Amino acid sequence: MLTGIVKFYNEAKGFGFIVDDESQDDIFMHATGLVDKVMQNDKVSFEVKEGKNGLNAINVKKV
Image (cartoon, rainbow, N blue to C red; front, side, top):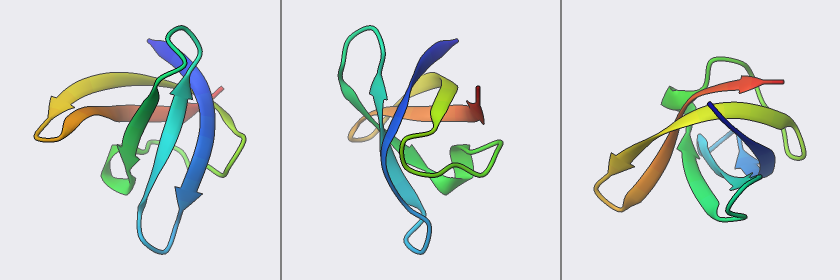
């Protein structure tokens, strides 16, 4: 499991971005990949899956 910080999340639109702690890359997250409700600046753990436009965060949980 990777960890990071929620950089941005728009609940109305159902998507946002996580900054990965290791690589400092922005990783896209969609509401369908959330396990817990998240907000901006929350510390989270997650897995990544290759999507059509790059990496997507899945199984996103608050830490």
